[in-house]
Length: 169
Image 1 (cartoon, rainbow, N blue to C red):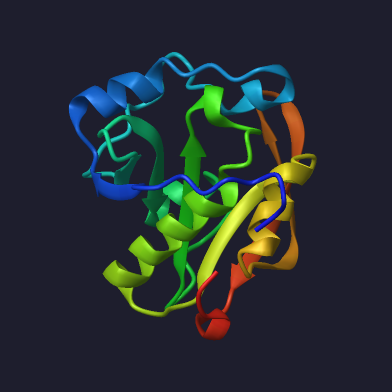
Image 2: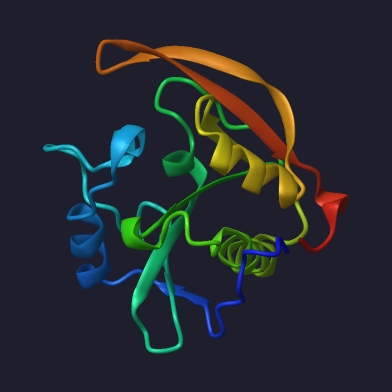
């Protein structure tokens, strides 16, 4: 854990509720992170699509985790046999406050409890150094890059893989 990160007690993962999905639909990020804002016409996130909520000890929504198809970049990655695709999002007002490592560890424990100790795969936009550092710190390793066009612009993603034997973050 970095010196500037403070533990956040009581984070846990629970099934996503309708009010959580509505809250996520209203999230707006600043600067280049606005690429992660929900867009008009996007399907709302749901448990059926593979999403769960990450909440604090008061039950307040802190973020979400998704696995499977929803965690893959559309049209970019095919399912990898035996590998769990994972994606996360944190409430915009909490981003950059040193909570990432604890949030990530809670998410990884949840995914491990549900899916066993299987390899994990994630994609992060290549410019997002903060998220890349976090993923690498949680045991993910670079496994290549993928380029595609989204919203009419070229986008480079870093593909990250966390082997099953990576152990606890």
